[in-house]
Amino acid sequence: MAFIEIAEMKKTFHGDGEPVKALQGIDLEVAEGTFLGVMGPSGSGKSTFLSILGGLCHPSSGRIAIDGIELYSLGGERLADFRREYLGFVFQSFNLVPYLTALENVMLPLAVKKRMSTAHKRDEARQVLDRVGLGKRCGHLPSQLSGGEQERVAIARALVNRPPLILADEPTGSLDTVTATEIMQLFRGLNEEGQTLVMVTHNPENRDWFHRTVMLRDGLVSDDCRQRGKMQEEVI
Amino acid sequence: MKLHTIAFNNLRRRKARLTFLVAGLLIGIATVVTILSLTSSLTMEAEHKLDSFGANILITPRSDDLSLSYGGISLGAVSVDARELRQQDLNRIFDIPNAGNIAAVAPKVLGAVEVGTARVLLMGVNAAHEFHIKRWWSVEGRPLAAEDELVAGSGVARALGLGLGDQVALEGRTFTVTGILRETGSQDDHLLIGSLPAVQRLLGKEGVVSLAEVVAFCGDCPVEDMVNQISSVLPGAKVSAIQQVVKTRMHALEQFRTFSLGVAAVVLLVGALVVFVTMMGSVNERTREIGVFRALGFRRSHVMRLILMEAAGVSLLAGILGFVGGMGLTRLILPFLTQDHPHLVWDPMLGVGSIFLALLMGILASLYPAMRASRLDPSDALRAL
Image 1 (cartoon, rainbow over the protein chains, first blue to last red):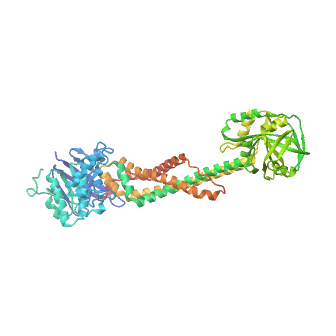
Image 2: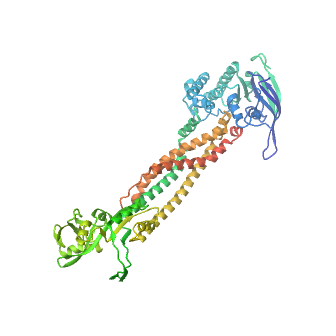
């Protein structure tokens, strides 16, 4: 059984004008430990794909399962609980909370965990910040950090819960080439430790970092390229 | 880190928004506190003034006299059936349900005495009570301290040529004039005033009083109730209220209180609206942030609690500052509303009430914004994903 199973995923947005078919039937299976890149031109449905995979937006139809759990059959607040336990998000523009320090931002996913002491949460967050090379910037507010540092804090926040799957949306989009490479190396390192990653990007240079690249066009998979040999052994 | 840490840090690090939110509620709470403490202080002052106006309930022996006076000229009375008022019966006044509203009971006995060739009206009083209720009395010398002392009204002192330290013989007993009452413009100027037991003995009226004046004020009940209560414990007495003064005063206080509460309600409503609008603005401004919270696994209830915790923090601060500010404002305003030296009433219940009211208004006003925030669609809120 694949770690991520997507079958006939469709999404149509109904606005004032004509309905917009963002996704027109995606079928995909991703193995655990894969570094998957999702690429495509603007309007191809990449962000919608990631939103649905992240349990943030209900699909119009289709089936999405992560680790055997059917996402959209989870009722009530269990989808929020699933996001907390299974997913880590790295957003395009970092989306750090401006009034919280780097350490507090990293602790955010742990804030609603009841059976964990504040000291334990702080220790966990410090460890992850150390891992991304920001152990000495814990007390800084996002406005006091560079773009690359903010991105690292966002990655640390995604990691702190030790989620089985990390979803990243254009994480290098607003970074210079050198910093972007450092960030991609960080993701690569995480992946080498067994972390499953799905990254949406429009930058063709990032393609070399992925095990597998899925190209989207007009809401459909137009290409599915497995890069055997260059990266880790492809599982599927 | 817990939810309240996020709420606290948001308030702490966004000082401008905190200031605006607190100010909105603070103005409302401070106005309410000012109005209520002003009302309270003015009511207390009114009670004090009414007290200093003198008696407002008069107790006389019941009689069926028919008054024969017209145009200020008294032709005496036709006595049909006169009864006496016993001094010990007056103690029953303190058994009435509203006994706590009685400030003083001043019994007195009256009788005519010969001083040389002149006939003078002698009044026996309980000195402590009488001088307490007649605060406008100003005595040259000193008030009564012993049974063989007299205070002379200014008119009597002038007519009889009495001065401080003079001896006066009354019915074979000698009294010393220790005080001269300064002119009052009332019948008191024509009295000789002695202590109640001494005058009772002198007039042969031991244990009997001619009348008693009662100083009573009840802010929450009509004075007629007290008149009825006293009448029921003194069936042989005629109890009457000087109603006009009391009623006018109470009516004015009641009007002021009603007006104040109306103004307070409007100001509070405006304060709550300010909080509502600011919190709505804050939720709109933080849409993306709320989206991040939701994406990171915060439940709707977590988001709602977060917003309400912030509202509670703001309200608590506004409640405390509003109370202190309101009391300060009262202290500044009070001297302009009254000529006397007003007494500021520090009521701890008003403090507790203002904090509770601030919390209630702040949380109620933030309830809809909090619900709206919790219902935000995470993907709409984020847009980035």
